[in-house]
Amino acid sequence: MSIDTETARRVAKLARIAVADDALPALASEFNAILGFIEQLNEVDVDGVEPMTSVTPQRLMRRADVVTDGNQQAAVLKNAPDAREGFFAVPKVVE
Amino acid sequence: MSDLTKLTIAAARDAMRKGDVTSAEITQACLTAIDGADALGAFVHKTPDIALAQAQAADARIKAGDAPAMCGIPLGIKDLFCTKGVPSQAASRILEGFKPEYESTVTGKLFDAGAVMLGKLNMDEFAMGSSNETSVYGPAINPWKVDDRQLTPGGSSGGSASAVAADLCLAATGTDTGGSIRQPAAFTGITGLKPTYGRVSRWGIVAFASSLDQAGPMTKDVRDCAIMLQAMCGHDPKDSTSADLSVPDFEAALTGDIKGKTIGIPREYRMDGTPAEIEKLWSDGTAMLRDAGAKIVDISLPHTKYALPAYYVIAPAEASSNLARYDGVRFGHRAKLGAGDGITQMYEKTRAEGFGPEVQRRVMVGTYVLSAGFYDAYYNRARRVRTLIKRDFDDAFAAGVDAILTPATPSAAFGIGEMADADPIKMYLNDVFTVTVNLAGLPGIAVPTGRDAQGLPLGLQLIGRPWDEAELLNIAYRLETAAGFVAKPAKWW
Image (cartoon, chains in turn blue, purple):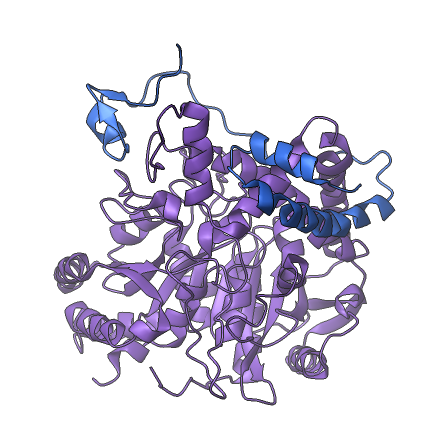
């Protein structure tokens, strides 16, 4: 599996990270080095082996479906880069 | 008392209880040492006011006579832990200015036990790295030095390792996703424990790879690891993977008696290119445990070779998902936008500016292995291999092995910048002996047992049965006693 510049561009887009055009070839070559390393996994016979979902055999804990927290608007917004009138502010989303 | 910063947790606890010294005195000595150690780049946010207030409160509790073991002990806290009202930015630009409105479970438990926070410690950005060089603060430096080079303290918990080794604090918190407690501990001649997955709550710790991350103590010796783990661990309803199991008295388990215990030596950890002095360290350690009455057996962990490749699918996949939250909306950095930039440009520019190159690389690799068409070929295959890696350990333990002895790292500490031109894989190989333990969810501890020809510390790793940190600590305690590692770095900073 070889990653070309176009694939690198697509992955950067999916990850929502701006990458300049002239940086894409180097990025693609780094991906190829890492994926080449990962390709070793193809040597392993995994027939009939379940993918691990939990490293400890325990079931995920459940809790009662009740409200346990809330009324913390000021604390929630405290670290926002832009908060106005009790909301997170972002650039216009809908024209 | 002199050299207060050199005290172990156990010695400080006993001296404070006897009234020979106060927490305020030890804390002040640490704060002075920290101010004189900026060249190490270990402490990146100092909190002297909090420290002195906590020390005073601790002294009152100790005087009242019912203080827990950690009461009054000055600690450094890795920047990955959210600490209320104190910068907690995972060494990333994207969390610049972030001051959590809440306290992580681990730091909350430590403070409830009376521990004192001296400040926040340097690390690799989002705990992604093995040399502390990906930090937005610049690298932490190893207090050990053998020539004019500056050496890495390892990573990602590099600041924690540097601070403990240089006696800037009595102990520190670390986190370990692929070796980030054990490798820096080995590089700096200190002791570091990664507990069983689920033993310590992850709540309030900035997430890297949630199925692998685990916090643990980084200390001056094994006894301190036992004492500090006791205060850090336990069930937490706020972390759904936290285990609801009783916690034994870890310090009481340190008898030093390991007669009849079975120690496995995995043949797959004998790798091509391992330096002769690492081989010797390992065989010396094996002999020490044999002399202490343990039974030594050769074991096989056949899928060892595939642990790093599996890790470099699973960890980036989980990271790409976890780090999606850094979008410039709710906290941290937001890029300055140009005229006409919409929300997508805001995300893309914010993340390009806020994440360093290694974090960007891993997020994108994770995005790729999870993307349509590759999910089965990469992500599901890696999770299947992970099942096999865990099965290797299960089989060894089922055959009667009590603990497994391996080297902690493939080399001693290397120079800052020495890996800059190497491809990323070379840096990843630092974790070749430690990463299997995270994939299998097991407890592992690095103990300093020797030095290389240049005089740099080297460590061995012991791997224990799940939930049996008590036994693991006891075997580590015996190894520590036999090895008698007492060397300290000469002060140059």
